[in-house]
Length: 119
Length: 111
Image 1: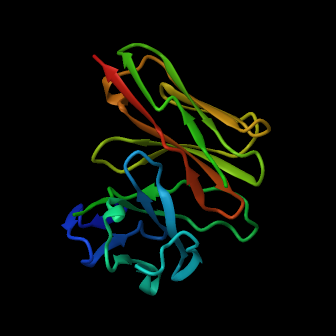
Image 2: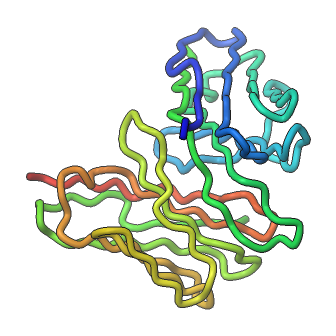
Image 3: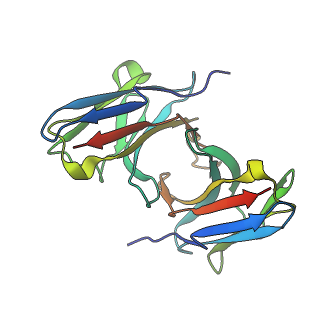
């Protein structure tokens, strides 16, 4: 089974530039997540999609970050313009959809991440 | 503010030592507790998902326990090996379905 794919693996940009990250989840996984992991911290959820709808984007800095998941499969995360504090690893994860009754928790499968350095 | 605390922050052990880490989490709105293993330059890998108070899970030399009433989970590694060197993350899943991660415990196992 192919895992979660992300690209690029590394990116270095100057502040105020734009950057985009791409994620391809595991086939059949309805739920897709983007996390930001700053050095020394745990991953923080930025946005969660269920198919192509947004479930939770409460921690996404919407003035500069945007994400989309067209056709409910691949997703892109964009930062425009970037700030120094955006330097982090951006992780994409996917999981099966929770059952309508809300029972059962599914593990999330993570991609290798994109390490972004803003200078 | 929901906090997931992990201790210790880092740990250095010799090959063959057994070790354990702690994860504490809010006891309200609990849905599940996840443990992940994250090796440098690789993807975080799921170890366990636990949902019931008193759950104990085991995978090889690694096991975990869960106490939802007091809000803690322990991860144990028996007979540590150099390949166990990684950051171990726990994550609290609320009833809403998203995960709140701790900062992790970084384990280094010396041969």
